[in-house]
Image 1 (cartoon, rainbow, N blue to C red):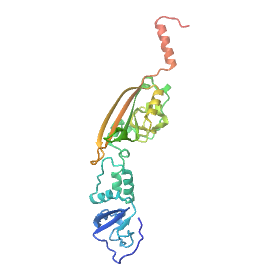
Image 2: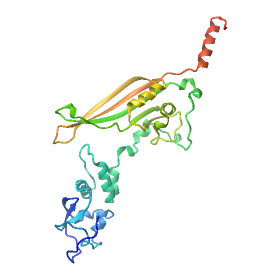
Image 3: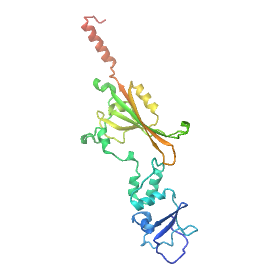
Image 4: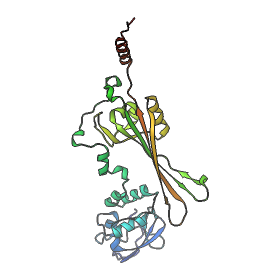
Length: 294
């Protein structure tokens, strides 16, 4: 915000009702609203102790000028009034609004706008088989398949993803698809590492031993087919899948809807026997039949 401008009067006090020009959008608000959060940027600038009303930048009509996003400022003002903010459904500018909250030094508003996937939720600890003793600094590498017990070489891996698109009533050809935001991986950690290796992102559930289970890993790439190829190359086969779809209106002024889906694919890998195991098993069968080995 520019703090230099034309001096128009000798009176340094702020009026009870203040007219603002924020990025070309005009707002009227009470002075008490602007200073309701003393630690914020607006609280500091419009503080009566500042005595700098004549030093603030003004537009040609004498309104206080703030060089920020005029559209998003309405939500900043709502928060200053009510200490909460109500956004429209499927609001696409949440990231930019968070930047505005950071600029105006409103940490509580920043927290409200923080994406859900960056906040830990209690149910995630349940789904990830969480125990106090399972967390630690011991970084274990997944053992090679030849060292894994035979009864642990088989197992399930579940691949899940969310997708959404906006579709109008007139024609399905107008559908605007959003990219798959994240491909989730659920299953035994050792098995997941064996399949996906370095493409597996473990940041949401780090420092876990290979014998544990998790549903918080996700892949570093966005192509679902690539994950299928990697599973197929490791001998996995799809045994089940399920999907759910929900729809909601974009807003009350249009018939466009947001369609959201969540799909899970369950893959299973049978126990893989080594050539030595097959050879030993064959010899045992011959002995049982009283056959002579050549």
